[in-house]
Structures are given as structure tokens and as C-alpha cells.
Image 1 (cartoon, rainbow, N blue to C red):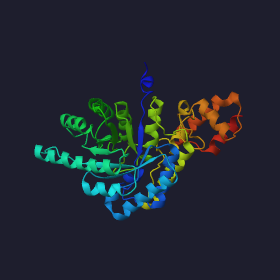
Image 2 (image 1 turned 120 degrees about the vertical axis):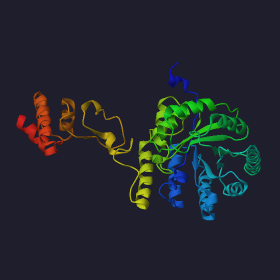
Image 3 (image 1 turned 90 degrees about the vertical axis):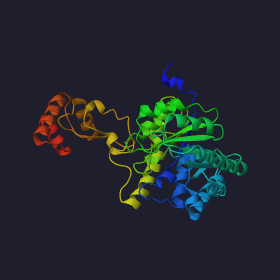
Image 4 (image 1 turned 180 degrees about the vertical axis):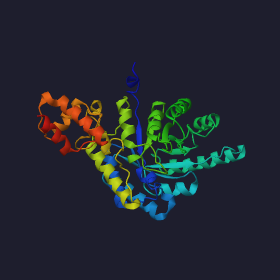
Length: 375
């Protein structure tokens, strides 16, 4: 059986953390209007959960999250609204008052924690869970704990086995962004032991591996994917929504995300990029941004000019000494430059020669002049 066929029964939930993680990127702050617009993009694209913010940070933040949740309910959105807080009683009371569907918690455990302190932490955590079960009986409780890249596997396994009996989703973050894809895969394989809880993967991009690590975390056994639009998040960000979802779907995973809807994805990413650009002075979409930057539709070597990648309206070709006959022909046709087909090889040789002589690629008028001279 192929790897793709093995994945056909894997239902993966997607948590889009653009709103919460996004406000940890260079101090970006989303208004209520912006959050609702982003929520609507997520609903249209089939995201399972929107992590709408961090209500315990401030009463006005709690009010904004409440309004986002109310907007979703008023419009009968299918997406679930979640928010993050610390795993202790004051925060859980705030979360339960916002009207969200799901409370998400984070809990920091020191490696040197004593048995006595560990017992106290478990007791407090069970109290938090008890409040949620009483006030939000339909909620899916998520808990992020420990840095899987730095935590001893024995301790991590103990926590997963113990909390897996009581929590709906155990989020296992590579908070430091130090892991490689094979390491994330191996760690998830070792932890898919819980009889109840789903494991969730949350990877930071400090070493540039967040999206790859997120994909491998799912392939390793996790069934919840925590990502954001354009990977926006703390420091260098987290895994990207589009690329991770697309890779997983290509391997047979069952995700609701409509990755074929590139029109809406492009609007979503452009909208977020504009907000970040306005508040920080520079955007998230760069020339070489995967799928949404211009580079994926630009070609120099003809063997790469299949035109099957990216969201740009049209391809761009740059002809230099590395171009081939096929790419030259596509360039001439695209720019309606007259040429004789029997002269294509000579035109190509002339472009190569002039490019290496000038030490740059050729401009359209220079290519047109070469074609005209050889017709």
C-alpha cells in the first residue's frame, strides 16, 4: 500500500492561529474589524478552528474576542472560535465568559520540577478542566505544554499518557524552532499513545523548518495542525496554512481546507500582508514567498517553465546564457515578437552570446532586435 493510501482515513483538524500568533509578530495589533474579516476568510476556506485572541491580556481584548465569537454565531459559521489563556483559574473564568466554543491553555513546566510541585500543578489543572466542563460542556479543551525539542522523552511521555485521559487536544510545540522534520516525526511517533486526546503539532520557524516540521508532525501521528496565514507569528513565525494543508492533502490526508480556492487564499494573504505592511513598514509577501510571491512564476531555465506553480496571473521569463530553445520560443510567443521557427536555434545562440558578453539578462527590445535581425 502506498503512503498516500495509508493516509486516506486520516481526518486532520486545522487551527488557524493568525489572529493570536499574529499579534506576537513585531507588535502587530488586529482591530475588531480586521479580525472579523480574517475570520470570514477562514470560514470560506474551511478552517476548523479560529484562535481569535488572548482574552486574559486585557478586558478590551476579551471584549473583542467576545464580539468575534458573537459574529460567528450570528452568521451560523461552521468554524469554531477558540481563545488562549494560561492554565489557571483566573484565566479560565475569563475565557468562559467570552462566548467562545473552545478554551485553549498553555502551561510551562520546568525540567527541575519537584514531585510535590508536580502534584500541585496536576491538582490546579484538574480544577481548570472541571470549570470548563461545567460551564462549557461542549468545548474541546486544548493544552499546550512543554517544548518537545528540549523536554526529556520520559517526562513528555508521562505527561501525554496522564493528561490524555482528561484533555481533548494536547498541543506539542517546538517552541524554540530548533527541530528538524525527521526529529518531529520521530517524536510524534513515540507519543501517539494517548487513549483519548488528539495530538496537535505547533512548530516555530527559527531555523526555517516550521512548515516542513508541521507536515512531518501530522505524518508522524498528530491529527491537529496549528498554523497561520503566511506563517505569521512570534519571532520568525510558525507553519504556513496553505503550504502545509496542500502538502498533506496531496498525500491523501482529509482536511476541509479548500486549497484549490486560490482566489480567496490570495485575497486572504494579501489582506494580511497589507495590515502588516501598514503597521511595521514591511510586508510578509516577498518576491520568493512560496506559492504567493512572484518568483514561483518566473523562469530562466526552460526545464522549469511548466507554468504549474504559484498564483500570479502570468509567467515571467528572463533570458540569459542559461535559456534554451523552448523557453525562447515561449518568450517570443508571449511577447508577440515575430520570428522564423527555422531560426529559433540561431536566435537562442545569439541571446546566450549577448547575455554573457553584457553580463546580464536581455531586455525585451534587445531580444526583439535579435529576432528581427535573424528573420
